[in-house]
Image (tube, rainbow, N blue to C red):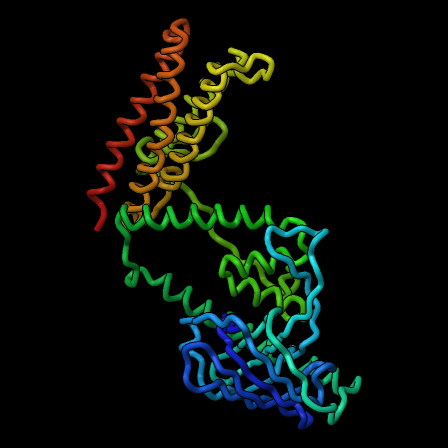
Length: 397
């Protein structure tokens, strides 16, 4: 992925006074020596033949710049001080957003691949008159060099991803996680999902929504793909790529009735997940028949019935996510910690369902006999969940 160092730049200069060559020095927060640029290529028209100096009023330390070589030889990418972008403090308001000049410095180095500086608040100074100008012919050459640099960079990324996937596919190198490590991983996943949802809402009307969200989420590879796509490098059309085919999954006949059953609709389900699903459907129909979904009849009791029905549905969904894949031939020992962690999370929906069920029967004694079978079924599902958790805990290695 690209090095994006705009936040940690303190100051720097670029000199494009010699046609076809760009030199410069860039000081980063926390580093004694500057990056020394010696690049082939051309800046965009506004900086052609000129020298630019810049300063960041609020530099931040960035640990990931430690891998940057002091010497940066390579090819210039897009380099301009007049790129336009909508700018405004979040949350984004289209009526208040302003167009701002963005300093954009990009190069493809032999040492580190793609490096990008993108900033709005830098102080910029252009020194002297232009010693040469970017003709149409030179602009075409510049574009070709930038596209070539981006193509080489994306190919390098693809090779790295393929190598990483090969290493991941090596089962001997896997280190299975226990339930506590999986709980931490699942919690972090929840937090990322919540953050992503907030960003979608915050920037729903922004024309650069995808790029901003990728940056906020730390998905540098998405930004690289978007940049490559803008330059016509990244093309994911079916005509250009062979579709990767996967063998059709079939359940293990030896574990039928234990790890899987085939439901009436033909789907493969774990027996406990299927049991919870059937229970949630019956409860949903009961709530519907009692009129709890009719807004005109909503009261405190009806609201609790709705929450009860939703908790039962979520319990069913969580059990399906944790267990429905067990019918296929998998290395269960490597999945055991994740299964236990998912079952523990599913218990929270059981607790919510029981809590609401107790509230309802305490407030409305006439519903006690109607809801008693659901209470018994919920506790039976819980007992089976605990049994499965103990089973898979013994498999964790």
